[in-house]
Length: 440
Image (cartoon, helix red, strand yellow):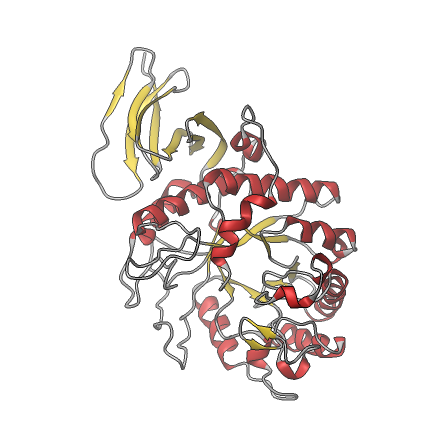
């Protein structure tokens, strides 16, 4: 996940352009009301199985009330290149342990296929994020088929979903491969589709119930469009995308863009999974990459909460945060100490689990309101890009029962007028206003 910053800086160029009058929050969330279950919340853990390098600490599974229904295996030393470092040599020890830990805690596993071993690579001397050769397609598709078959057979019924590849780009969109330095995939759209065909064929033979997703594309909706146009839709059962975003607006713009492509190719019924997203916090002593924002831990936690809420309202079926103990985006520190993101994740799970979102809308001036209900009790969640006292209209016949902040336990001052509207100070950190029926 070394291209996070570039993703955040460039993502705005890859989405639909909205007029000043349009409400992209309303467009993205309209008609997606459904109960939010634990399946929505997923996580990437680097250190559930200790790394020999000690790069990440050994991670303990989170304790209730925070929990995750599934994990995604990436940056876990479980790539194809890790489990098959040499021809004929297979080492499943780490993958066995990850799958075992997940099963112990009742969590599903999403395994990311790919990252070619150098010996199997079509371009073994090509630089890639993890060394040499790993971004190329396999030199022989038989290598790919054997890899997928060995994994599918070994973990039948235990790995429930396979992601075709992590953050591919395609040579079709570049003048030459020399311009693709640092990408996770440097092959063609046709090669991605062929790998999808082979992977689905193998899964049908070894583990028919397993889901195969699209490649998890980032910052490039055009690749999903190309993948579907080349016939890839027939082999996948879910769409995976990495919704890294520069703002709440950009997050929902991307969702609208991806759903537009899905509908155009007759894939609107497929589940849409956000299999990676996060918000980096660069230490003060560390120079910022060009164009990056310097977020505090609290600001990053607030941004995470915003997109989790918006994703649920926009009908994302799953949301995998990256990553639990990541140096820049983690919810816990190196020694496992909870950070602001931990508290925010716990609070958002409390707010959303069992809830049904009715939709979100812009309140103007970079303010957002989302409505929902849980067991018959209605609520409003609101936030703003900069602190502001805002009057929020309440549904007729309802009053404020309580107000809860995302972080901390400080009492939020509110004022209710004769019409039942509530005024409160809101900022980047979402606030939930619980409502109760007016007693007559």
